[in-house]
Structures are given as C-alpha cells and as structure tokens.
Length: 262
Ligand code: 6PG
Image (cartoon, rainbow, N blue to C red; front, side):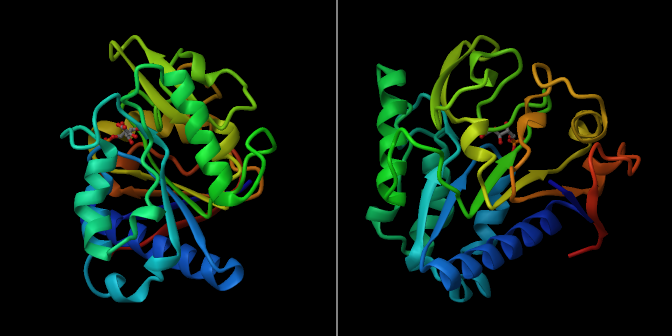
C-alpha cells in the first residue's frame, strides 16, 4: 500500500482537493460498476468539502443518483442532534444534491443496545452490497476520514476495544475519554476501501500527523495508523499548517507527495 500525501495551501484547498477526489472516485465507480458506495465521517473538517460538493461544478458533475451514503462513525445522538454526523451531511450535502432517502444509510448510534444496532447496520451494509453479512467486508469506493488531535479516526480512539482485531465491519465502542459509547466502522472494513482519504488541517494536528505518518507504529496510541488499505489507495489531504512537521520520510512508500495549491 502506497501512501499519497497531497499538501495544499489551506482549509479551502483541502475542501477543493477532497471534492475533486470525491468526484473522480464517484465517476470511476459508476462507470465501472454502475453505482458508488461512500462512507462519510463527521467532525468539523468535512463541512467545507460538503459545501463545495453542493455547488457548481460538483453539483452538476457527479452522478449523485447512483451514490449510496453510509457513515464511518456516529455519535450516540438522535438524527436531528447538532452533534450528529448524519445531520451534518444531510444538511450540508445530501439535501442539496437531492439524494433519495433509500440511498442514505444513517448509522443508528442512538439506540439503547449499541452492539445490536451495530450488527443491524452491518446487515444494512451487506444488503446494499448484496453480500453475506458474515462474510468478508465489502469494498467501499470512497471512505472519507478525519483525524483527531489524539490520533483517532472514525471512532477508533486510543486504547479502546474497537482497536482489537475483529472480523466485524461495524462495532460499538466504549470511549472512556468521551464518557460515551460510539458506533464505528472497523479497520477490517475501512481497509477494504478502494480509496481511503484523511482530511487533516490546522497547526494543532501537525505533531500528531507526523507521528502517525512518519513515526514508529503505535496503533494503541495512534489508531489512525491502523488505516492501511489492503489494495486501495490511502490519500492524506493536508494543509500546509498540518503538514508543517512532516519530514518527507513517511513510513512506507510515498507514491506522491504532491505540493500544490487550490
Ligand atoms: C467524529 C469523527 C472524528 C473526526 C475527528 C476529526 O465523529 O468526530 O468521525 O473521527 O473525523 O475527530 O474531527 P475534526 O474534523 O473536527 O478535527
């Protein structure tokens, strides 16, 4: 697995690069397989990407009607809660592009029994892909992730149970640091992705980004290091502030360290 690190000027450029990657992956998937499966993350970083995708040229240029939307993780809140990753994407992207409700697969992390809800969501993924729910994980065409300042991604937080190897595609994860349980896709599912991209911006993430990409493996402390697509692409879309501590010696072959501004 090669690592692609695309360093762009600033947050706006990260959003532009992410929108372009989304468009390319979606068109390729639809051309090759007639549909596209996307998993979205939450947090603040993807907001600008959603806003860019919801306007020209992306609004017209992407085969939205053929895209199935899932979430890589979700907070234990209702669908209309301000902290809901689902609500963020629905309001900033899905309503604008007119995605049919049947293609929007909200992660039900607000259920009382989160373990059971995770199994149900895994079944929903299996049905959408028309595969067995207890078989090998399917391959999403694009999985968009963020990285926390603590090195977590999705809801794979340091020193939590969800970091342990599992055949499950989706699990509930108790996060003591948050005092909450969350639902998250597992590395087993994420690493089957055809293209997995991290959107990372801001100086506050520079130290951790360098540790994750260039430092020694320490997956308990740096869960983002668990994301190593088996055969797909791993693309880091980072702004200059977040890339400030990168020395250019990524662990593993860096296929492209593209400097560029958008
Ligand atoms: C979540 C996200 C989480 C996020 C990182 C980065 O539910 O919070 O899925 O993994 O991507 O915490 O968040 P920011 O983009 O806000 O820095």
